[in-house]
Image (cartoon, rainbow, N blue to C red):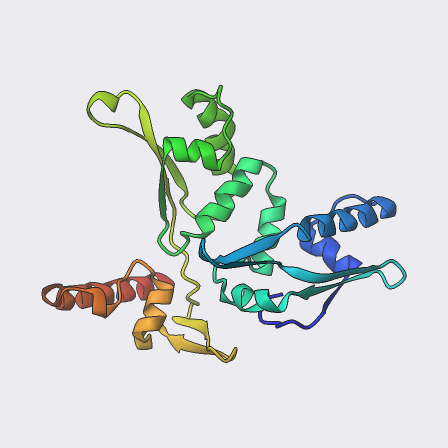
Length: 257
């Protein structure tokens, strides 16, 4: 639905089966599941504003199923279109196909999470927060987490995140006997093509390509979010940081070559 404004979008049943990697063949079940999707969509809502003044609205205003035409028509709420188009971490069609192939619910949670850190290749989380995010059973000890959660994640996501490593980090001092953090490391993904170019989108919706050596500061930050804007860097560190940025670019270009 991204970049489509508020126009009605029509999906054929066949396209929906492909997008969702739908396995069941029974036609009646498929129709029932499509209706179930609407029941979930109609419950999605957004609240924006402050505690003193806020607005709530549903995200989609129309969901029409035509069994005769074998299609589904969806329309986005006008209030939601700007929010939808500002999302930068949404799944591409390719990523959606990867996601639907995952069997473990823990792997699916990790996939969504690591995609947010794909440009840095690093994510670390405190163990209690890890338990909350992954909805870990209270009875699980670290051995259970390793066997039933971390091992399946590494086995499944290793195909989609190169050089994926998962480390259990112990605490310090009195906590040195206990696991305090779960750390994920993998090769960063920056969408730079083999010729050193990357595609960007202008505010008017047009797309263009630029070479890594010619990146503007805005393009560099989009590609490497860990690089701070020049305005936020201390003057005495600026020259050194710019030099590091150039070294980083040359290193990436060498890898591309």
